[in-house]
Image (cartoon, rainbow, N blue to C red; front, side, top):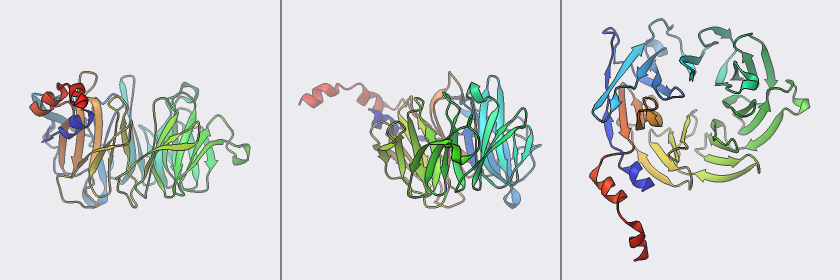
Amino acid sequence: IHELKVNCMQRRKLEIGSPDSSVSGSNHFKLIAADTACERIFTLNDVEHGRCKYGIVNLSGLGKNSLTVEMYDNLYFTNRKVCYVLPLRLECTIFILFLLEDQLGMLCSFKISTAWSCAWCLNPQADNCFSTGLSRRILVTNAVTGHRQTFNTSSDVLAQQFATQTPVLYNGCRSGEVFSIDIRQHSHRSQGWNAVRLFHDSAVTAINLLKTEQYLMVADMAGRIKLWDLRKLKCVKEYRGHHNEHTVLPLHISEEEGLLTAVGQDCYTRIWSLQDAHLLRTIPSPYPSATDSIPSVVFSSRLGGTRGVPGLLMAVRQDLYYFSYKTDDPYCIHTKNMDFSSLLSN
């Protein structure tokens, strides 16, 4: 049944509206990312000369009888190249943390050197802190006071995520090393601040900490996706079929639905069962595969908020698509209602 629900997802193109008639829909999507409540998605769009602009898409109009979303462009954002974005929703406020070519912005700006990744800490013991993964070092900054703490590393830090139960930062490096930092420690390697250490054979492109914070999902540039048990420091599952050779590509985990989603460098979106690592479905891009047309996706059980709809959003080129997860397809409904116990007994 789990596999049937995924395979019954049908692609439907969304109508993108805008209250501002000056907003053009011809700019290609480069990236979409949902806020923590999945009420809105943050969009990054390509404009002329390799620069970017961003906007907010309101998902409140997404439902069974409506496939319309509202696009709001931020016309005051400078058209500079954006390397990474991190949308957050804290209480009633949405914060956008983004990396530019030479600076970090979050409603304010911090000058930094070349950056590869960033992460925001939601743990009360390190409130208002964010981390930036740089070339051979990590910079942890307090957004309120501006105080900085530096951790030197042996490789570029391409992926980061904070734990929520403890003030621990997990980092994935170009060398393939994954290690953790307790940011309450001093910033000297000799004092043993890197507690957890894991190793992949290729550059680490994404890390995702599961809710129990006992397991860490890690993807690399060899196309391997592994689930690590942080208590035993052992790989317990491997999700096969992902394609990547040299691109930093994110992972999307829905523990509520038990699904792992990733878009490969070959422009195919793949969905695995989180529990048994079985590849459930491979979705081709609506457009021919190209390095500048890799889809960006968001999967949630509640697109549009607590009363939202479940499904997958896919942005590719100038289009936005919706795949309904809990479909009303008669075949799926009929199959879900079948008595499988009688079939198995036969």
